[in-house]
Length: 210
Figure 1 (cartoon, helix red, strand yellow):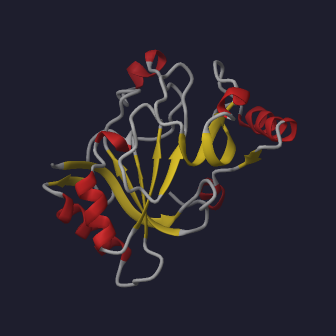
Figure 2 (cartoon, one colour):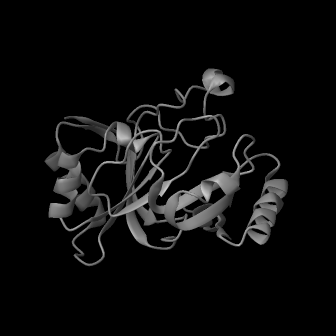
């Protein structure tokens, strides 16, 4: 299988329980909930995405002929250090491309694999840390994992219903929007009203990392 990568770069993980961890950020091109074109945003199943995942022209992006080639690219970006190797696989929607061959190739090079998905496709086996971020109005089939990240507020999602899913961590993240302060207050209110939820912020944006 070949892979289309929008960008790949070394940074610190900015979101969730693993925030602050050194990681290679591997963003696949393409998503099943939005084309990525602004003219399609209003009709998209996910209309608030803040990420450019169209094409392969980002830093470290490109087309890769196979799993070993892409895993070697990730390793080159990480550098020679052998300890605590971490790659964060995202998109777009990573489950459109992340397959068992790539999971094996990354594991063979000593990487732990974290992935963030919208949950509408079953997660590939072998992922070490799975984050599901559900979007209102979609059919979520991946209802278990390590952390559930709810971008909030979202009309059409009931946090109480999500609490029946099988996750170790339930996180609420303010929607990055023009009414950001209101979104922050809404996320705080949710965490205060329902103790199972923890507030998480996009730390990379706070400190100016990509």
